[in-house]
Length: 360
Image (cartoon, rainbow, N blue to C red; front, side, top):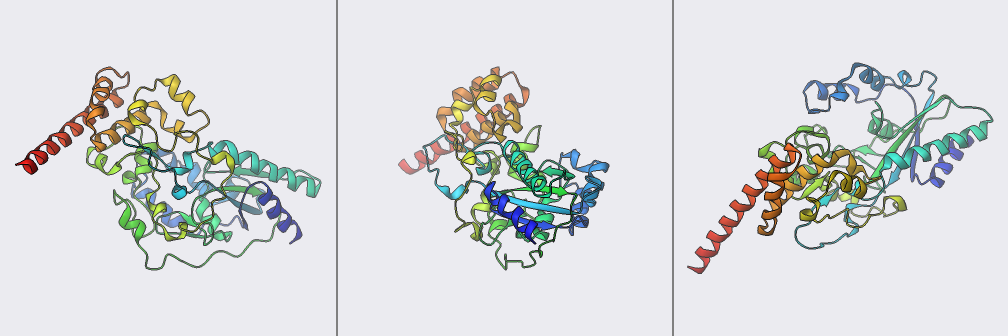
């Protein structure tokens, strides 16, 4: 166990508060995942259906034939409860994982450092492949089997001490390592707070979710129009959503030991929505350089901003929304701005009628 312990200690030095080892055997919930795909609950994420990727998820050795062990690590990011605070009206919300640097640009280098460490210890090259939400790997299954926690009712991996605010990374390794015991307890118990709190009802009782209704999917992965019947449920979320983690009791006392690179950058957590509507393509890329928010692209982000303003119903946003409706170069943004103008006008008419009734 000397090499395994040394590897975990090096992982801690690289900022991974969680580290465990498992085997490259097929993931235990592969059948459930396949049923989820067959039911179409993945929405428009067609890349999940690719036959080659499905074979690789079923057998990690398809990704690395020499694989004998898998190191799974977890790196915490800022909890959404950290206290960004209310910065006034007209503000949107961005999921906590996107407040700082893009983890896709941070974790791979840390994984590479672990490979370098192993190779120094062994004095030879080690066959390996690393992933962080970047390949066909059922990482939560592997993490549970490596002893890092259980998959909660909100579908997040939950650690009893660290909660669920952490990124996962995996190293497929062509060397034998002693596997850790899997985490076998289900500590959600009878709690259903996440299911009850979800505005769109996307969390299913079988610990899967209907991505087509998930706010994170709708504001990030969906590339077209957000279904009108779901737009009011998005509230003022403009990139991702933390609700099912915010209400989870296991996150209430999780320590805040996030890496500095994931600390909030400026006003990223709570953007001024009216100001965001003025972002050109160039300014959008400049503002969110190195941020996960770039994944939504300008048109997706401004689509989300328009919906949030429509939901907030502030009369002061109408002029800017009308300008975007009439002049924005992207038809997706214009359509959602038009919807938002109608929503704001309706809300203010209702407020006016309510005020008249009260005065009367």
